Length: 334
Image (cartoon, rainbow, N blue to C red; front, side):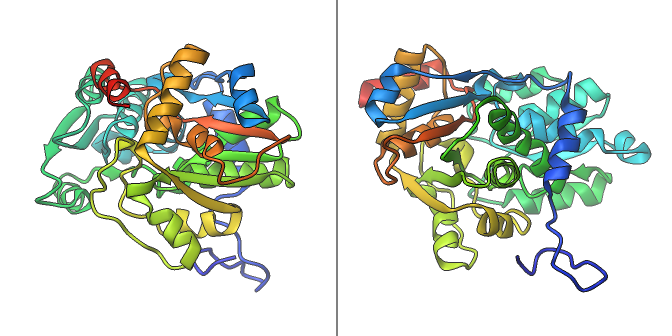
């Protein structure tokens, strides 16, 4: 295990900052609040991959992405003054919507820092859930710096998009549900931005189906997690130009990086062109709307980088929040 994990007082093995028990507890809290999303299959995709594919469709989650799980779980743990002063976060969209809706449901004020170029559909949805949106120029100031200033001024509690134990535990319920539904998976492919979903699902996989190998997939332009995994040293990327806006995170977190190193078997990257093709397959063959980031795991499976022939493969479709005009423009360019 890693130095970022707290040691037990008896000097025995380190205790992970997020455990399978935490994921089970999060599942109890989320019961009745989050959707238990469907697992879909496709004979066409199976034939293409020469494998049995099982797609966990978080595009059918509340707010249209898996992020609701971690956000609601984290906000539900707040007490007294923390709830009264409200919650602050930064996000390009899906975590923003998740925090906003969770705050609305739990009666907690929310403020969201969003880049000026975030998808308009995500800005409008975030405001529609009752949050105050503060936009910023990502080329002029780092979102973490702006958040620190606002926390000092207001006393709000920061719930970051991924580097938070309660967020990771909530996201891990995606893997929990998938593996409770589909037995004996050989592999699990999960998209990776900041690593919250990936590490949470990998923790669940090790406990439920320990022989299942877990792979993280990120866009080529935002390959910081893959480089970090390969080198064992935290790497970063600055404002990567990729259509996968949910995976433009600059680096893995202090919490998620060691979890990814411990529980994930390998990492890979895929091109934006591969993402467009995976999106097209979801739209045309499965008849579901999937955003570019949501197609990362499927694109990873279809890329041929990992031999999946004959395997039972879990795939997390992370979200479906996409501007329809922008999506059609992507399809036309490919």
